[in-house]
Length: 117
Image (cartoon, rainbow, N blue to C red; front, side, top):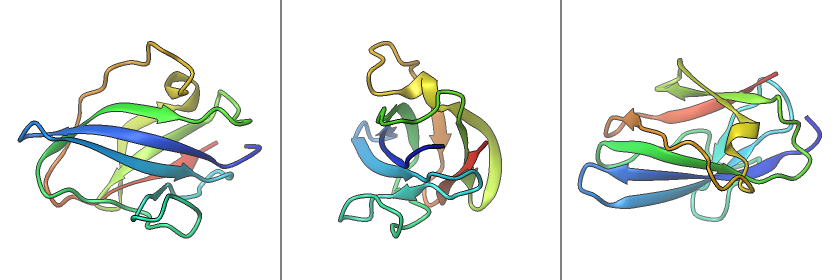
C-alpha cells in the first residue's frame, strides 16, 4: 500500500438514529484500523469502537489518495476476525453507486478491523 487513507462508516441504529464514524486505514498489511475518538482518526487513534445500541453499517466511504484498488480489510468483532472482507476499490468515495450494506453490530460489541494484503 502506498499511503494510509481516511474513511467514514455510516451506521443506522435500532432507534433510527444515524451515526457517522471516521476511520483510518493503515499503510501496511496486518495493520489495525483506527477509529475517530473525537480528535480525528489517525495512527494513534483507538483500534475499536462501540455503540450504545444495536446498529448496522450501511455505507463505507474511503478516500482515494494513492490506495491500490486490490487492497482489502477485514472487520473484527470483539477481537475475532469476521467473514466481512471489504475491498477498498468497491468503497472509494468517488464511486457514486457504492453497495448498500446491512452489517449488524450488537450493542456494546467492539468493532475493529485489520488490513489484508
